[in-house]
Length: 255
Ligand SMILES: [Zn+2]
Ligand SMILES: [Zn+2]
Image (cartoon, rainbow, N blue to C red; front, side, top):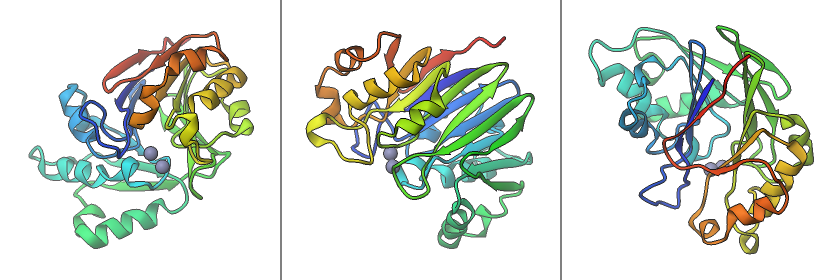
């Protein structure tokens, strides 16, 4: 498997980090998890096969995680002629179909029927969906918004887990235990802590409980970058830590 962090920022706009979005290759599966503003252009900038994406998955419905989805569908329809014909599977928590319906109400019918089928699959927390070619995705609930989920993508005995946006939850650490890569949000420094996001201390505690083989941090608001994230996390967890940037690639060798 391969993970590429496309968007490691938030809606606190900075030039070098676009909003949330990550690309996972698992065999023939080309999965985009979250699709915030700027992610579509990062796909092109990095030379990734954006036309061949097979699946999109939303962790939750905050704008910084979904707003480029309409752009991506528009690109598949008009960005390259002839337009896409291959079906797309859109995975998301309960409410995903209604969200797409509301976006289509605003922008037009083309979003529901862009010339290729969009199969919307609302994933139940605790369940797993086969993606094809031996890859699967599982979801679990996380404390952020009512619908928020985290994902685990698995293939060939390897596992990439992405928190999406989340507050601290020891149950999640248990679920994520032993992931090959744990891609974890790291939003705010301790003095700005809120229950729906993680601080570097909480990220460290999460890594100490989940013991991933590689702990990768993302979703940085600018104030958190003014503290020594690496040192704070390192005080809890001795394994490899990467502070991701847009376009970082993580290769996960399969069995
Ligand atoms: Zn959010
Ligand atoms: Zn976010």
